[in-house]
Image (cartoon, rainbow, N blue to C red; front, side, top):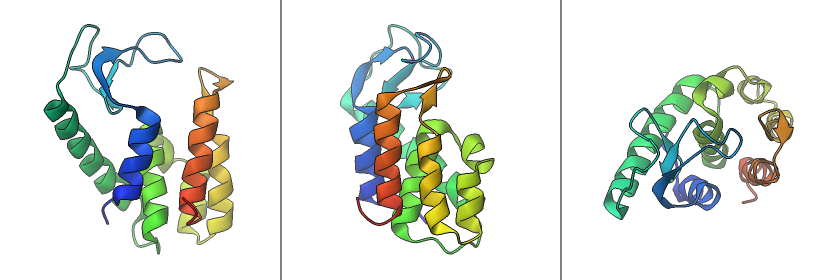
Length: 148
């Protein structure tokens, strides 16, 4: 599977579009981010990107998360809206966190209602609840349930 426009739009809405690298809001430092939620060893204070570089990075990042989420869900029956929500979650929190989550276990077991509830548990950064993460997890859960 690959993400749909719903996943791309949700990610872009919450990540924003930044031409200048900025520090992580929870740490005030690493990881530095640029574009639409792009992080990596090449991102550092003072880095600037144009729109073409931002779009190329987002396309590459989404491909990586599509592949990673598809691998993690395996043969579990997954609707497009569920896949999109899982891609957004992994984009924000990483494939490792998705892979070890009760959210993924519930999804793979066919407990879709239980999986949808699990999104809300992932609203913390630096050990404290963050309003933006709470809103994002609610949007992902709504998308997962088919109610974007």
